[in-house]
Length: 263
Image 1 (cartoon, helix red, strand yellow):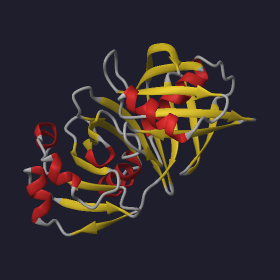
Image 2 (image 1 turned 60 degrees about the horizontal axis):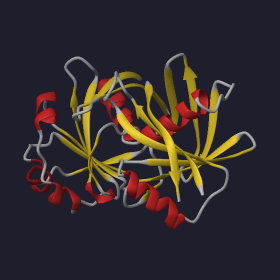
Image 3 (image 1 turned 45 degrees about the vertical axis):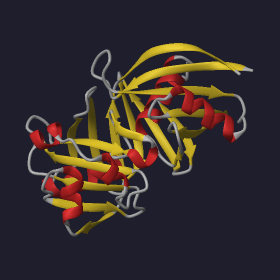
């Protein structure tokens, strides 16, 4: 058995930037163990698999170790392939996923994710967070489903230079990972995302984390249209809009590789 695989840099701002995601279009679903094995061998933060059924694409995402319920950058990468490699003629793609219906709209060279906005509650800024980060939190919140813990610190510089203890982060009560964020100097906010719980020490650019970051910063800054940067080594740029129960997360993408998997 063989099928095509692509690697797309999502939320990129040029070559070797953004978050590389593998994308595998399928005609039918193989065994789940096979999907896990492919994602593990790809060894990227996410591999997206999708199967088209009528006008809807059923999509699933796997890290090298687990399946996740939502992934932004790999959805953007999948949309890039559907639009540009599979010659999809409409301007909106509908995905069916474990997180419900998701949409991606093409606006020239920007791909805009229409995702659910996360709800959250504040937690006490206890010493366990400072100990894990080596920084003093201003605010700590947890996403309602406990997928992410978001920790705000005072400056962009602290986010950029942070060297968290991944072992201690892994022990925090978050199913997916920990977001470190601060008000930006040239953008509205910046972030980094660490997900050792999901087998990813640091994710280059994390679309799903912005389902939490956008409502948080929209409320804090009292504005709905926000520009963001993720300060990983590769870096990423995101164009964000808060729209009540939904968030719009826009970014560019570039094809890096096209090949074949043989099993």
